[in-house]
Image 1 (spheres, rainbow, N blue to C red):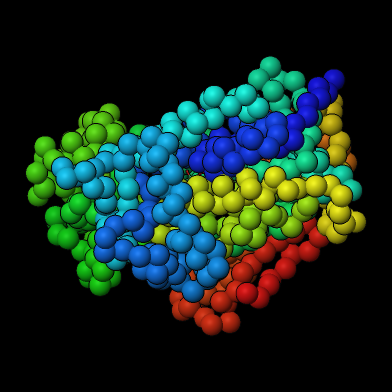
Image 2 (cartoon, rainbow, N blue to C red; image 1 turned 30 degrees about the vertical axis):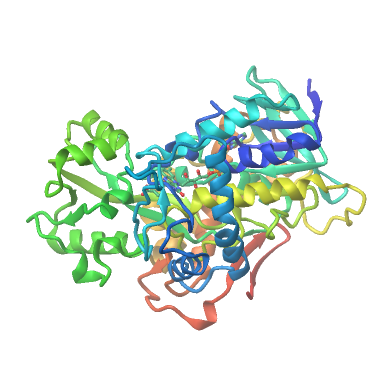
Length: 527
Ligand code: FAD
Ligand code: SIN
């Protein structure tokens, strides 16, 4: 039997974007936040380096915009960048007013860090656990508000599409009960999709659910080929892929080869602090040239300063028997961030009435082809807030007739469970082999030939009323998003930002455009 709930506003996800939106909505109606695991399980809680904002004396929104646009490699939406950098500082100051304890210097000024491709120090941080601190502050802000309910271990598996708009979602509650939750406005704030790849920094919950469910409901998704691979991920066989923050290089850490030689300037004039996509490619090239791993080294820096500034990372290294301050740390790129996502306007509106998106699951266009370090927390904060404000005015009055082919809404737990012809491990291996840092037509075509028929079969089965469980939903989501990443990467015959085609190594003016998909057609659209 299906249980039923209603609220004024639904938020899927309890990371920075979802929580910031909830704060905005709390005095305008009943807010139900659905989050599929522990509320702190998303990427926000893992964010290390910090949050970028133009608050330093030598900084300005114009400078922050220039760095963001350069990293985005010609594909940022300039209006979105303008919103991010001009509103960003005020949103961050508000966090400080609410109690965020960012590190400060002895004179009380903010201790701003440097990260790759930033021209000045602009990253606020709480040691190396910035996301945890921000989540703490937002959760505390919500805790006293009576009209906000956060329901954990609630796995959202489907949007309810009615009369051409989204009227709510279906989810599996903690005890496995299938529940319908209805609201005037629903926000997808489900974070990233790093789990699509075998090698990733992302937590278990980052399986692209928001992109998959929005796409299946008929919303437009865009720029999915742009996946950021973070260069410095601890690569110890058999150990988890712990992130070694870019802030380490901001404080002087160097990438070295097996012989202990720094090598980055051989590939990139900006050396160790080039943008992430460039550093990742240079590392793989150096590794191929020498036939050996590459390492991050902090051994030339004062050990006590390193351990004091980066306690979380020092602890992660210790867990695998390494000393952050003195050992050479084997590193390799891993999937870290999705620049693409559910297409939105500057207020989080998607192409479907009633459905909004913010944070990593959304694509405002702010990151273009490659995100600037520490701009993601800022994006979640600013655009989460803006989406929350826009949702206040949502109404079902003027929904148009349906224009897309949404999957009808059968009860997801019907007796015939959907079956997906690939295992999660095989899918993640395939994506890593064929659609990661270096791509070409042969690999992408191989991945497309494997995944596209499975996605078509999944969509057909769902449309015919096959059932879902939380587990089959996870695999279905990984398949949907993985297959869309591959389709977009195959289509973009150039190299730009994080998308590198060895068979099309040049950046091409004709590709200064976005790829996008809706279920009614597969389209390529101009800027
Ligand atoms: P998340 O924080 O990932 O939250 C998503 C939420 O959605 C979670 O609560 C999840 O459980 C929930 N969810 C997902 N699917 C469902 C479903 N089907 N049903 C219900 N709930 C669901 N960025 C920076 O700017 N600075 C940094 O220093 C930084 N460091 C990082 C370090 C690591 C290790 C990682 C992985 C990322 C880092 N990033 C950093 C990126 C940044 O943390 C994320 O992009 C950002 O936190 C995303 O916020 P979000 O609110 O969109 O999603
Ligand atoms: C890091 O600390 O290197 C991650 C920062 C980010 O993803 O922006």
